Image (cartoon, rainbow, N blue to C red; front, side):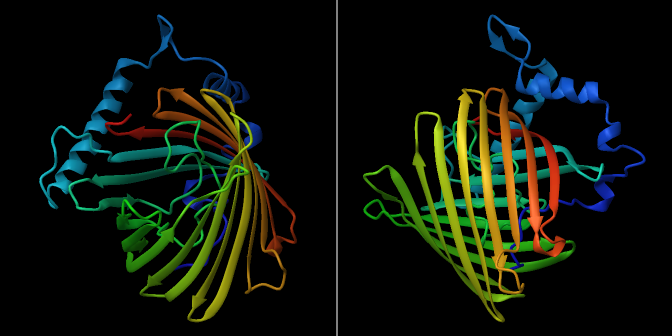
Length: 346
């Protein structure tokens, strides 16, 4: 398990567009403005009031969705006899976009992840495949702008978040409110593969004042770093039909050598419309390897627009990060991201 750090702001050099070639000030402002305006303000082409995309794009979406479903059913058949009439919830997620910083540099990025649903197992079992470290841009698990997402502090401390292949086992008895989640597999770092396992136990408490609180103790093991233990406390309260307030606190300790890490964050999410949501985030990160009480403070916002149905989204994410190793000087950035989800449910 590697040291927890805030979401990476500087992407790989090979993906960076050098300032003399294409920098923020030299980007075609008109094209960029049109792109943002089209994605966030206007509707797609419509026929009888219903938005639609060109036929070739829809055919590609359907093909990728069927492929995800076929792969899920094929893997599921290894564990039992899948029900052909049951919809498989396997999903393929593609993200791409551009990252701009205040040094007039631009970086292109792309991400791919796949989750295979295996309903034939006696308990809930999933296969997770990620081509790179899981990031927080956009919704990782949800498909609607109504739901939570973009949280830069929730459930990110001790988990199988690195690139790799993992089996996820979810167990919960009908008579018990406790849920047990086991992630086990291999984390990849370039050409190196490392066995890792994570055990999480969680339960959600509902309080009369409207708060939902979920404690989540965690045990982590990896071949390289041995054991680590952690405790997460996640809570949320719906302030209105459109406002949702969330906070998350995570504390973890590596046992060999003994090193502790901490992060805490708040998020206020506002649903402006059925297709548009904005969230405001404040996060603090720290660990005992530094002299300062706080290692990093990050302030960000996310404006997320649903472009088409429940599978295509566009996000604009401005952020400001202050790190102790940079004397807490500002580190402004802007991320423009397009996200597409493929599966039978989309």
